Image 1: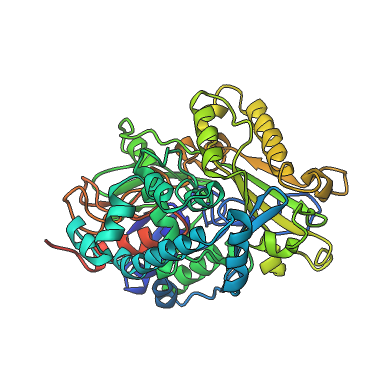
Image 2 (image 1 turned 90 degrees about the vertical axis):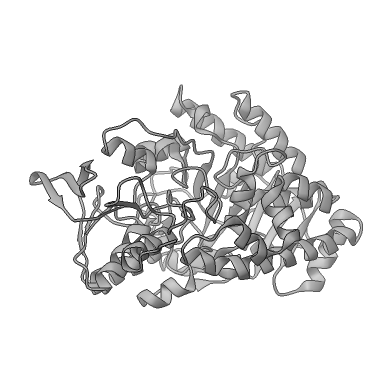
Length: 502
């Protein structure tokens, strides 16, 4: 069997299949495996292992980790989020309910939105517990999922736009925005009208039955490293520097490496590549044209920036998700500006500091003297970067820094660490950069728009099947793929090891 692409999903598929006694060959274009789940030293002479692309883990099922014997620690963040508002802010403390309630009261002026928050996330928690196990099974029907999650959740989260649900349940613009950001990560959609935002929201709240976003100790490279070790331990052969140039419906794969061009037939091909790339390798026009919509900014700081809110410690604010100009109306304004072909004037974004939870990613000489900061910007579709990528990237960073400065007590640039050559430790990745560097069409981090986690096409199966019997999707483009989950890899392996029949 051939696994086309050595990203984390491909490694999961390889580990399961090899562990079941199948002969497996993984072909990876780059000189390393892991895809976008990697760690890297991004700045010369700065001993920091940044999670360069993907950066947190929620969707990876504990069952997959147990099955594969992964040597991996995922560390819970005490603080879920902090959202500045004027000279105060909304702090959600996972370990202090009274402090969270008081913060809601200070920001919203009452208790209603905190009660609504408890009710709403109580509902999503119930959905997570019931829905997450089904992600590792053959696809259920919509009616089966409706029975599982209940009528209220089905209506509020699946049937009508999530923006309408949020607007009805919450009164405060800041609180509405905090909820809606989970519907927009890596997704360009209007949550008031587009059910794509609902699908994105579901993926961000159901992970592993809890919805918690955890920090991988050692960085994202530790996730891929553990999966690579599992695949090799099971007996899979992994060949890097091998670029696939063609796939045949018969299961034959053509690739080139340092020794020239080769062809190998594996019986089945498990494709850990975007569907648009598979179309090209099959020699046909892509059926979809995906578009990513995010700006990723990696930074190393010499110190944490000061907050306007003196009642909150910066370590608490930045160890969780720090929301920047992500109120409900601010999100809508930025979406409209991007739709007009403009970089948003005040880009909504969020940051967190991995090193506050896991200092091991800092070299010994930098511990206590530096912190990492990861920024993820919303409503930055690839179309904004097509005409002049370098200028657009600079303009987007300038606007994003102005946005974060507007909620801090000092400019973020004053806190950036510098290399020995005097260069600021800041790295920017637009969707066009991801398209060029990682081979993601449109720079879409989910490979294609996220799907419903059930069989809405009436086909059933494992959600990995293609029109060609010998070709399966095992990556983020599989139904229920997306995010650092391994679910696509697991399900493609199970489609061969435990065939489904209606």
